[in-house]
Image (tube, rainbow, N blue to C red; front, side, top):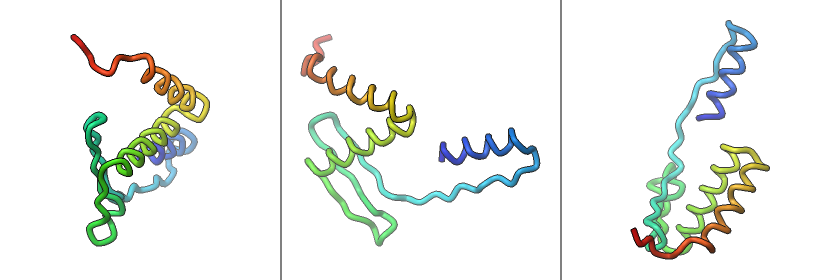
Length: 99
């Protein structure tokens, strides 16, 4: 949706009378991550209710989608840098927050 809004803003700035593209929502599923304890999700929900997944596979898909979001939001260079820094922070931060 954000990419479409950006494209439409560019169209408006270039030509005030430009025809704007319309957004069509497609429910592709969703994931919920509850820290490192549990992840559950539903993929391909547009196909008869979708496929429910949980555990390690759901955690992997959730992390992959989050990284894809970071790359789309910040661009490839800054996105990869942020992903790398986040990975290093997980080594440095304590497992349990004490305050």
